[in-house]
Length: 283
Image 1: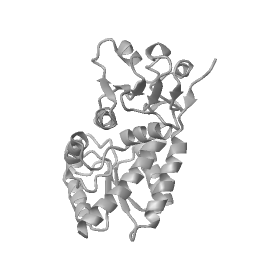
Image 2: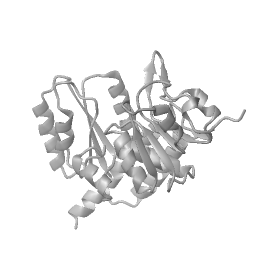
Image 3: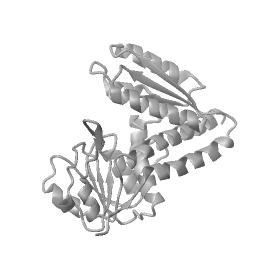
């Protein structure tokens, strides 16, 4: 039995970092990233540590600011405003999720769209859907880059995205439309979900339910991108069951698939933000 080809995010991320190093070598400045974390949520601590490590390895100026979980919303907003006005800071990232007393939308809207390296500001969301130039969410960017690296032609392809989050599903649909794909976004209220999934030539699964998608859901020869990261005991499980590799032509692993691409595209967004903003400031 032939199993699906593995689409390695680690391999593609290496290529992204090589390209970024070439770009950085030609810049007259060093881009600066500021990451804000509230509280000591273990997953957030781990993610922020990884992002900071990758930024420093790349040669960016990276600084992590850690505040107590009970930090008032107003205090956080004041800090963001200060960073917005700091000409030496190119990218601002507030690690999500935030404590319950802080309104996430208010925080994301407070970050300057020019420094919004997560790509969540409403202005950047609008530019994504209107075909403009902006900073777009890292995971969707990473998925598209991963597929392009492995020679997946998206033009005209029927792509089904399972999941409609503002972080992955919705912005990914926008990016796929830019690539001339035919996109269906399905979700927990969609009827006949397995049937719709099985239509896909490219199936992207971002629902947060371990091993939800079984091989009966997958069209033979389809390409399957698993965005899920579900922690069970000491294991990380994707949203796609391993048996899918028996029918798909290519799959992304968990871990090692979309995750490394998300971090790589955060670095790319930071460099892009620095170039766009500084060139804008210099006329």
